Length: 163
Image (tube, rainbow, N blue to C red; front, top):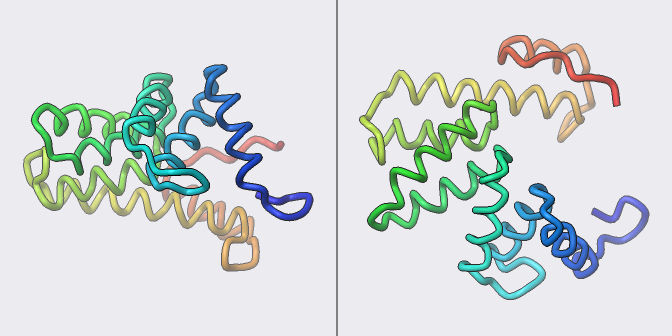
């Protein structure tokens, strides 16, 4: 991220790999995403899958969303059902990516029976959570705890604990 200077993706990858090998789900997810996208290192879809599978198995919602979407996009035999299951797990943990991907499945009927009402509800929940995060962190707007609280309330998100 470069919080103390310039970002150093090469060093970040070294540390993500070490932490991933030690079993840290967040690092496994980040390493898998970087490998899948080919950011900072050569793209390696199989290695990406392995790391994302490990992070997903530990219950990390954003890894479940990423890996579930990857499986659905594969469109191969036996990939749709586990992909949708992972998206459901991520959405149940209020992960906005999982909610959005699952909403798209309901909107298009991909891997599930088409259900526009379910798609709308999931899209709305993802948008509310995203807006709460935007105002909480001041992403593209001035941080506004009052607006963040309004969006958290709309999404049914508990008030965050002080850090």
